[in-house]
Image (cartoon, rainbow, N blue to C red; front, top):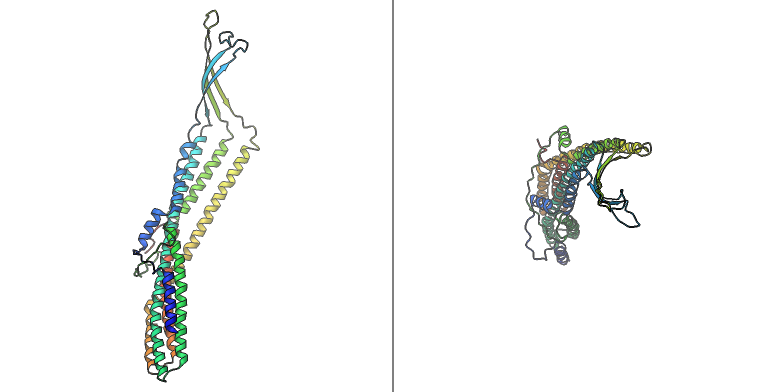
Length: 426
């Protein structure tokens, strides 16, 4: 029964893990994953393209409207259509130019420049978010690989326990329930392994999406990583760095400046815009060959904001509210950033302390316990149930070690993204 279950599980594992595909997959280190994501991620490229489009706006809105060239035929007699018949008949060409009130163009350009700067900072923010997501997903894959590895090792150990229990049962020194218990725990390990492999498939698809690769692209994570976790700076220092480096906060500040420029522009709309023009009218000679002087026409016009109570004043109110909204958004974002930094810092330090505890204390003690239990069981001083429980406890602790190490590195990824800087250590 045991060998049949083993064969079935082995085939299922081959199917889910993709081992049946004879592919030569190179190791994907964390740094190479980050490099690929920054280069190929379409979401980041989209935001970059938007930023470049925004950067082209300021010069457009800060430039005068295009001048207008006109050609007119004035006062042509409809009875003869003779250009020399009437004194007022003329062929006219001219040019006109709209001129906004002084300061309006500069304010429009200034507002657009702030919006373009905000868009540029959004690119930086998106890049940090992408790096964070790649790091967290990569570490999730690393943890799942280690967990599956530990389970495979424990499967081998439980098979040995089954053999020991079966041997003792066959010679009349053991119980059948010991054999059944070992088989049950072995089946549970197979079930756990299937769950972990399924979770790995999900994270693999997520990482492939971040790297702009097919969802079924095989990913192999290195088995060895640096297990040392650095000490963080004080929270107050992290807050200061976030205030200086976080691109999201800089983007919000630029949005506040843009809203201020638009408010100033709305106040300028109380003043009129102008339009100037010059037109030259040429007149044909009379029927008697008498020369007639040509005409020069100069024009100056302006709009009169007589509906300021319902138009310009309301525009100022609108821009004032928009400015307050963006200021509140900046303050709210800053509060959230500090709260997130505190939460991530606390989580990192907790995970860091747990890794030390597991590696230097709990796991070595659990291994000694298993060794002692196994030796005692072989001489009938320890019952089989306690032996199995001690082994299960050990593999749980080993898995938890890699889990908290992964959580610590994921918290670091979160922190660097929230601060906008890699060097956040003492």
